[in-house]
Image 1: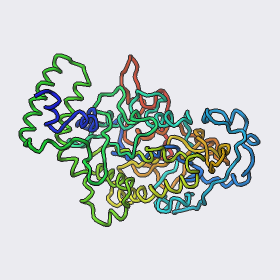
Image 2: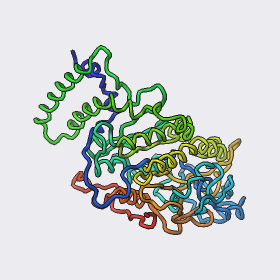
Image 3: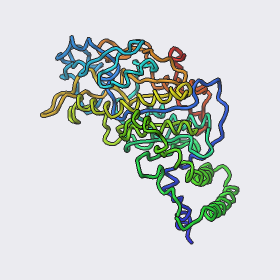
Length: 464
């Protein structure tokens, strides 16, 4: 029997190993640098650049300037540095296309497109002064995930598992649920120079499908025979490892087989939503994003450290240009698809006592401009890419609920009060998990690499 046939009979083909991870094997839990407020993270990432002006950053002053050219209000320098393929001098200021109202005891402003999310704002901390370094989708996604503008660096999920290890011996510590391939591709959840065990496991949460491809063994092979085959293979791998000490990829391969074997039983239980009562299914809803949210809660309960949900990755659904369906239809449909699942996740975690230890993050690569793009023939109303001031939010995990931190100017152009960089954002997440972003380093090419590079300040004012 050749090697390929041998592995296929194990039910652990190369495709399975790469999907499961390269390898997200069991990593022992490690001590944090300081007392953590959160133990787990659920990272909700909206691919395409959700508009802060149509979601959570209420700017009524835009109505006063509606119709004016951007060049009448902003300087040439102000209008540079967005999308290099577009010019904005003749673009016209447009007010928010949706109504905003205040909600909850905190009085947070939320767009009409989020009716269910508006009911849980007292648990949410809105950060309205984020800024990043690029208005290009692939670079923006990479910055928000890895803290660096070029590929090859570990994602935040990989850094978290590197710093804290795993809480489960039978499930990977870092799992990604996605609806397609994002603009930046898989680099947003790869492990970079960290050992392979810290790469994300990409899972499927669709009905009737195995959570990981090629997970089931050949039915002709008994469980005991499969175990014996695997044990013999591991002995060969370990013998080879002794001759090649220091090869982290080989160790990752060994661990991947061990994790894959465990996943044949553990994954089926963790991903089986049929165990949930009808009331929970009704709470979350039944679309793919809702199933991702419910699955994320089950994974956190099962000991997974970091779960990311990539929404709108297929086709960059949140990219609200005039030639991509228009701003109004784009954001109304995207919010309708995600509103129920997000609100249900917060409600469900809170009811189970899990919100206190689970940090829920909603983010995107950048916001949208206060002005529309220059109209092209037959194009609808749309906004351009905007990285100089936008919004994200956090809930649970030691974050103060019911507050808004930071502020953009009256037109939503610049982060002017308590500006927050993506490095500050990352430093704060690590701090909530008990990790010091300056001490969480990995030696690579004679340099101590870290998620926040040489930057980053913890936003202590958002921590309860």
